[in-house]
Amino acid sequence: MTLPPILAALKKHKAGVTLITLQIALTLAIVCNAVFIIGQRIDRIDRPSGIDENNLFLITQSWVGAPNGDDAASIDKLDAMQQTDVATLRNLPDVQSAIAINTLPLLNSTWSGGIGLKPNQQNSTAQAAYYFGTDQMIPALGLKLIAGRNFTPAEVNHMGFRGHNRPPIVIVTKALADKLFPKGDALGKTIYVDRDTPSTIIGVIARMQVPSPDTWANSWFLNSVLIPTRLDSGFARYAVRAKPGRLDAAMREAPKALYASNPMRVIETGAEFDDSSVHSFAEIRRYAYRADRGMAILMGVICVILLCVTGAGIVGLTSFWVGQRRKQIGIRRALGATRTDILRYFQTENLIIAGAGVVLGAILAVGLNLWMMKQFQMDRMSMAYVLVGVVALLVLGQGAVFAPARRASMVSPVEATRSV
Image (cartoon, rainbow, N blue to C red; front, side, top):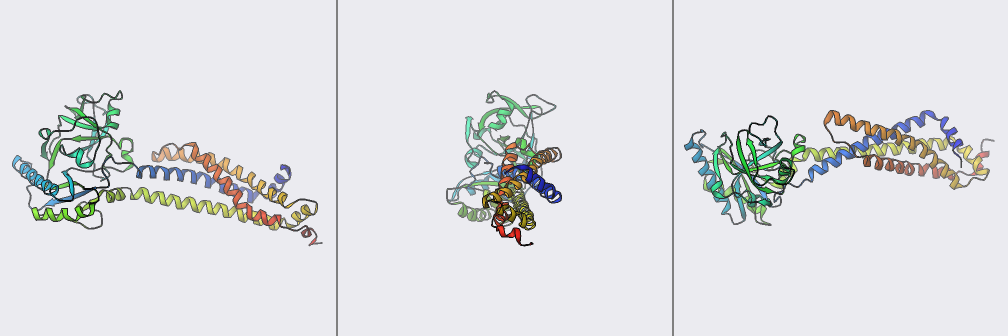
């Protein structure tokens, strides 16, 4: 079989060839970028937080009639109430540990700021999230200390919610330590969490994701700082680590124990996520990534629809051509062409059209990605996505053309004489 007859036949059907070529090109461009976006979303959803996700839950509550001033007496009273609650939670039979903390990974309540290496540094060296707690943060959250030491109880202080943070010592994540000190010598070094107050790094933890799951924190999602300070205010968040296998029981008993200790508080335990409730970390993760999950599903549906429409277009166009060429096919069969020759003819014809479509589509795919990088600050798409997309579209084309091509190969030589 030679190409000139195939090309000559395609020239007689320029409109159909052009439409199916453009359809393949647009499908490839959109599907490649959609699959790339799906991959990014899945990577975000699968990020490990660094904490004991299976056994952790969060209680957010507010006291009724609690002091609301910034004076020392009010802050001391709030701190005493908070410590009483923590002791109550730790005494529960299904609870392994409990702490008061300002936020958790993926909670979307972010305390953050710039970290400098010099006092009053104009442009910060790194952005980081701040976690305020006690010496029990690392064991309670299941964090892994990989260098240095933990805080001691004597190093923990407390301040009002609106107080000025000046921590003399901090613990940082490995990602932040590597960003600040690329040579790997972060322990014992001085950084500036506060612009003019030095803080010494006494420990490094393996990982702790920042509270924000949004794209604005993508470049520093593992940059976290642990600060040995209890924050005191009219509301409090308690991170509770249940004993293995006892999460549900601990979540049921914790609100009851807190109300028994002090009924002058508000804790909501409804199923819908809000700021004042009891939630497992699994629910926090699910809620945080609901938009990413929805986007991935939407993009997946779009890809399936586009591929189905493209496949249907190839089937329809080939079927139309087969119907128009029945007499020509019959003549070729009468002249000695085998069924395999006819089948190969239509598959080669489709391969030429699909080949032109995927070449144009590859160019469009790269161009679309560059445009989205500029408009939406997306990452550059790997050419592997384009190459896989090219192969997939070519395979789809050959698969779609097989049924009508097989019908064409079944045309009898007698078709050549039907109109005579």
